[in-house]
Image (cartoon, rainbow, N blue to C red):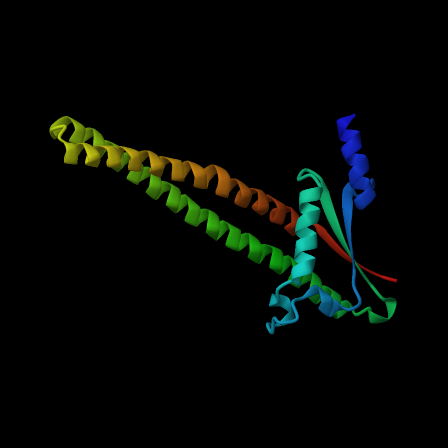
Length: 191
């Protein structure tokens, strides 16, 4: 029952097509230029998507469960139909998805280096704390050093944990969604 309620709620926002087994994310445009960021002077195939459009696409990705397929329908006025612009736009949209995915992968790699660094530092600090605790006197200045190394070691472990589970989770989730975009169909409809 819970699934049907969610599916019903979702079908009020996005149309589900049984034949294609996918949800439609429909975007109405007045021209092809509305797809791209007006400030981006790069060639059409390399231009960034319009910020509002990208936000809508990402919102659709969060609304529609990850296991479901998405089909993007761009609606334009009939008199603007231009197959060359359509092909370039589709290629540019896919390129944008791949570019975002590339930067997400770079960020994940950077996070993995941070995790490794924090983990190694945590081991070094805890080992040094244990070593100094055994070898040094428990005088006041040395006890502060030992406690500082002990606390620092656990803080490093916490940072590694935090980056992996909190920051990394969101990035891995976003990467899944952009992978799904790269495999989604993009169709232009002229009315």
